[in-house]
Image (cartoon, rainbow, N blue to C red; front, top):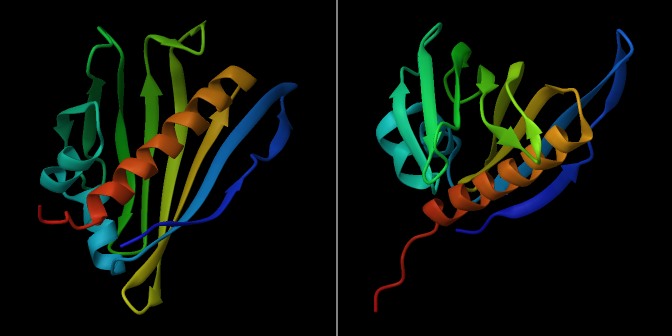
Length: 165
């Protein structure tokens, strides 16, 4: 199973109340059925296995449910939020709030939103679009673009079967 990069779409910049707002958008094609790809994000048992360096402290992937993730070796750094929408095999939307330091800037980053859109492509392939909206600095945008790119690489590796030795 192989992930193809469709396009790391450079974020759209808008001017909201004279504040620069950057959005990260990434698209990937995975060689797995859309049901399996969706479960990788919605099932806490599967999710906790593939995102390297992430500790799942709480994950209630239901409408209004809360999550809290911590990073290994980053004392006090965490992401937390609530699931706003879960449409099976189609879409997951959740808020994203973090603490700590991001690209040399003190956080918190509050009230940003992540939307995952899943699309079946046939032949056991599916496309994932990840959009993270609401960054107010170039440093936050760049750090999260790098982080989400790494996250999707971890997801791809988890979808690839191991080769027996």
